[in-house]
Image 1 (tube, rainbow, N blue to C red):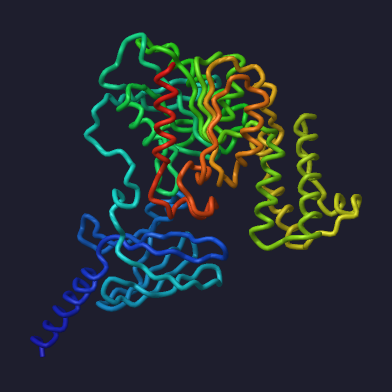
Image 2 (cartoon, rainbow, N blue to C red; image 1 turned 120 degrees about the horizontal axis):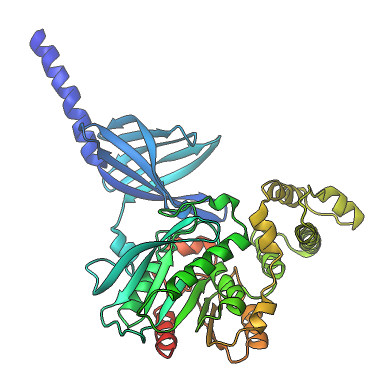
Length: 449
């Protein structure tokens, strides 16, 4: 009897080990959530004590190592729970697949996981050491005393007094120095390419992100502009470089334009940087969103009018130095607008989360700054950019920035990837981080400086 108990105990140890061997490693799948797809990665490994542990990543949301509890693990099934998100996943293991169900907040989604491919395969442009150039981590202090951290990338054939250096400014939202999004690292790719071709760069983490101090949630456009100004002055004060300029993507391109009249950079590169009034761009984004969910005709027209009126009130308040609740129902009534309840509720939800950053962004009009630019300027937009429309944006560059070098890139999205639809939901599905044609344009422009 004792021998039987001992054998059973041994089997209980062996079965979990065999089961763990089935799932050990990384598994990726995509949740179909309405019109979008949300990739998830489940990581199964062992801790220092040898116990099986699991975590989850949401690459599209830049969320990593979310702890999971392993509820069940057998040779043919696995079940895990994420307490912090109120979510569970249960699936059947069958060879190179785990087919199951992801549940959260009463919703259930089919989810099939397959072994994760190496990042080098999914993001082939991401630089990997050893690097044939110098990489120096450093820091600087912004105007309000916040310590911000960044990286200087210096070509091996550095020519003192001649090698140009570009200060890189990231797009909207809290981003690290690589502008990491959907596992892409566009600024790392650009910095690597330019360093290999004789151009130095400096890129830095946004305040409150990675190694930078501060609180991004309390930042306004003015705060971010001050950070960018401090970064530019820091690099311009470093010895050894030649001309010093600004290279910004999306919001970073806008900030580069806004800084130009006072800081007098030697050159500017705008990668899909918005230079039309922000209200115009954000309204176009919202109209596109309405179309994406099938709202057309009169409901679309009325929704666009309502959003425009709400934006006007936000701008009025910001420029008056106040921030008060906005009564959406009253605006509808005063303007005889009938909108779908779902649209009205969505606007109200967004207004409830309104902050100083949104108000300052919406009130932004870069055209006056654009008129004052006298340095060489390269402006690039993709024809499939659904966030900053190429025609209106490049039209503003052509109208207000005399002598600007303007490039409308066929088939590129807002991240300047070759795209099929240009939609945000497609960004993470594309292996390319940034178009080689854009990189070549950057090299040619910057080496002329």
